[in-house]
Image (tube, rainbow, N blue to C red; front, side, top):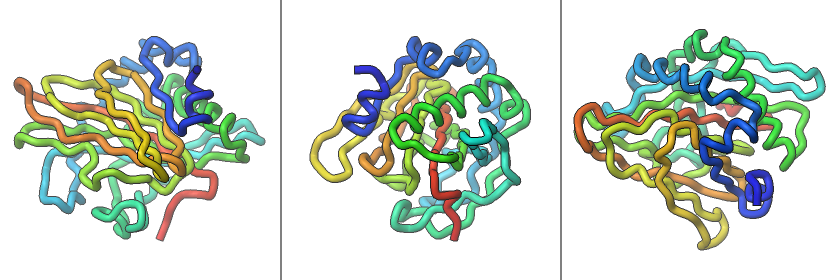
Length: 234
């Protein structure tokens, strides 16, 4: 089955890096040129587990199918209800926006809109309200937690997780399970620009902690969420 069939039938699909370009009509080499922007992410000041292992930036966009438009919206807080994020829910979190050096590149626009078009084949919509999160999880203090909230849903329609870089770490197993049953998969994303697509209404997901396996261990990801009913807000 291809990615769209998998997403439709089981609620998730894994896309190897070699298949990313053909699926999304994006130049993976141009995406690779964006990797450097993960090295300057500011520290996440909102971690409620007392950790200092996460850095991130966050920006929001709208993909309008009727107008064939895509635009970045004024900077806004990231917010989730406690029903979806027991650890950080109910809190308006203001992260620094993603740098224009990333958001103004053609590859960025192509990536976000092509993923949105894939999701629209599963669930046709007028527009997607997209939140983009650059994450770096490091092992400077020993342990880094990609999902400190544990297994969860995000309260959106769809989620896309791209691995940007993985260096000198062990662990970080990604787990995707049926939200209403026992079936699921476990695997470790290791190849840059491999992609996981998820139907957030049908599956829950988490990634296990990472541990150092050499100096300067990091796991860099880009997480994109797509929601038809507007951005989540208090």
